[in-house]
Image (cartoon, rainbow, N blue to C red; front, side, top):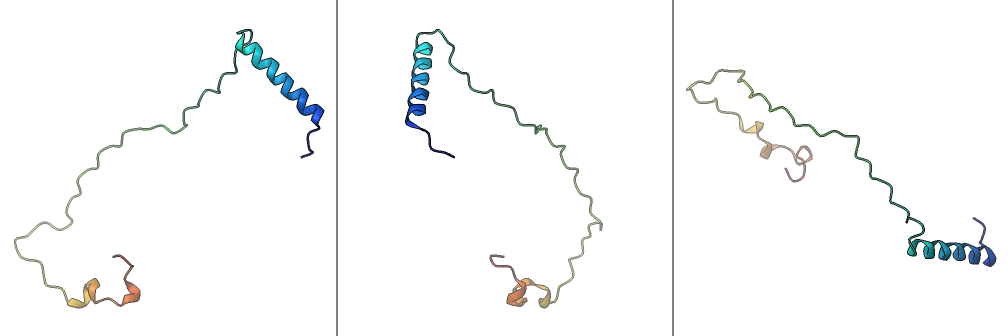
Length: 84
């Protein structure tokens, strides 16, 4: 962008001072800010989730024991995510 000449700068500032004086004297309305647009996203209330049904009906018998190899504490270090 080319540099502004001193004469152009003085003329621009004089015009701004003149406009400010007219605004202060209530001869000209000050510029109004742009109205804010509401976002195009509409907020709606989500439907409550339906409770899940059990695939296997509950029984009184205890769950079968698992082998210790199935638990994450016996997994290789490369397989476990940090902080898990």
